[in-house]
Length: 251
Image (tube, rainbow, N blue to C red; front, side):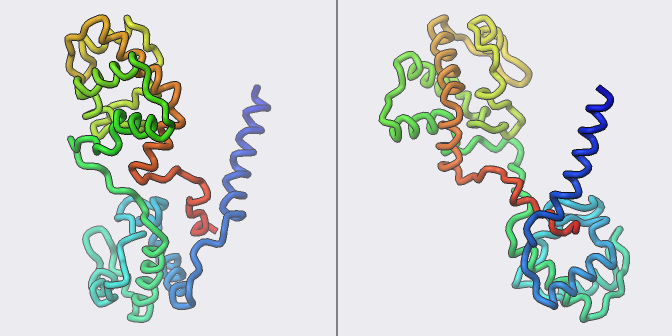
């Protein structure tokens, strides 16, 4: 067992070195932008700041801090005199221009981090589970079974979709029920629905409504992969890809 654990750790360490060195070349930089990258490295900016969330956390992520409309004069005092915990770097005008050109190049590569939804923001209508199911049903030309349709109506009537997002965590960390509702027995469902759970209120439901809700959740779990694809299309979200992680900075 110890040998297997040691071998796994060695492979993991090897992967941590191989992946950054075999990944794509990263964004193409001009000579001026590459000079800015050299300044970024010489002054160890990444000890406090991040690019694409990678780096220190004393300062903000600078991936999208400088766009093409901003000039280095706006940052002159910050870069030469410092601010708060940021030290005075005493950069020359040429170095300032270069590092800001590098950050403009970073800004053009895409968004670093998606904005966090504000607290208590309702789930967008386009990502409500019932909307996704209706869209799937129309596209597949397959109407929902009667008990599934009734369960979907009970789901909407109880406004479950106001908190539980489709295939994602809700705005207040409500779970994705298609992934975590492993025990969908009538007993477990009745216990949660009729008594509430955490911040979830209790509901008065009939045995028929409970059976329909279980049929609805069973149907969602069974068709989760196809429904999740419809939800991504409706919401405009993209799937995560390791190829999009910017390893190039650590070469």
